[in-house]
Image (tube, rainbow, N blue to C red; front, side):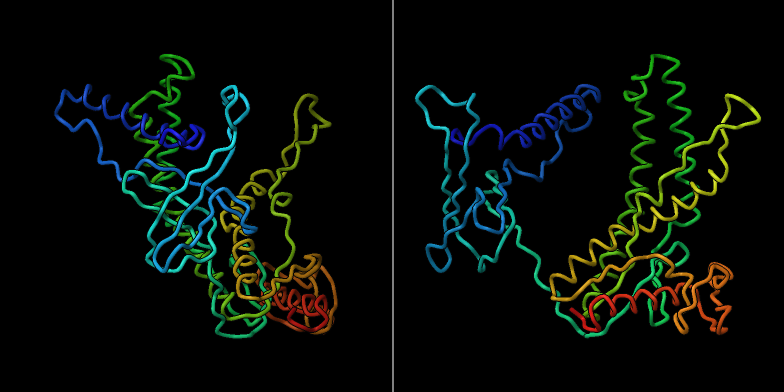
Length: 354
């Protein structure tokens, strides 16, 4: 332990100190009625990273059928080196392995439980089909595919939304009371506010985990069933950027916020569907199993007739209805856009899937 630089153990030390301080505080404030310390599941340890080119500071060398050596190397900052001492350091840990070591990204060393864990690279997903599909991302339906099916991300229930709004209002009232009593920083020391914030974060975290679970399962299924997936290139950051208020010509000193409330609702809907994370996870999984994710320009995909190619704003009668004013072709607007996205992807790849 004396040979390990403090920079590696800094995060673990902070965690340990926080737990010890919290335990002593509980013991003092409870009068000894509650235990002073929690059962710490985590042990004293640290994490070392390794990159794909085998030049990281945590390398594994096999020495036998069930044994090996992990060499962790690094260099201390110049200010920490004693006069005449060496800046480079190296730790050699002899380990026994229970299974073959695949390519890994990091090594977690647990000194307390005398264990060492390799975080492996994800294995490629076995593909179950070689289909091609175009996807249109929207607010009403999270995904509309070119084959006419829809995928909807699970939304918070009315009860959850009502509870979130109630907790936000309660926290705002507590903030005003605490600021009136002792200033702006006092609200962070309020126990009631901390309990409200904990309940809010718990409920919000449950909603986020449910959404992320849907994203992982949906992208996994799409990557397994399709060899080519087409998406439109959407700049989510620019789409959710609020417009600047304009000066009111009739009332000097005031500004116009035309459509600000409707724009805020649209921004919330776009961000709640998490389009960027969905595309990122789909790209990772398509690359892992040799598939191809094609990104095409998004201009006029919702106004172009897939049957005759006529482009007109009047083709889009409503959010869900598409009816071409030229040839009379009628279908769901999101499905028509998904088919246009797939057609552009096939043109971009020359008709192939790579």
